[in-house]
View: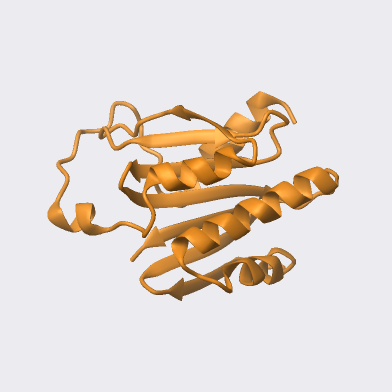
Length: 164
């Protein structure tokens, strides 16, 4: 898959996840409520885990200055978006192609999902994703203050985890 297609998919992921913002959007001030909405691990812990699977990350802050890391693997079949700070993660998104791209891609994406769910504290999360991927509709689950969503867009599934 070309880097251009991967970039378009990540842009779509950001829009679906609600984190996309136009660069000329008005700056907003962080509120205590918004700052308190975070997931268990920090962005550094998730980045370290996914980096071990071959993800390479680059900084792409949101328009309001919130730190965001966009990352993926060299082959373009595994992508991620991490929003937050070193000590707190505010949103996690994984791009999961369901077409057959070979056993290496399938294993790496399974490892990424398993790692993310373990870091977020949902031990049965990887099994939920595995079951939801094959369904004909989007899936949502709320566990321990985190909203997990698996969206279908053609042959791609977007897994997001956001605090509620």
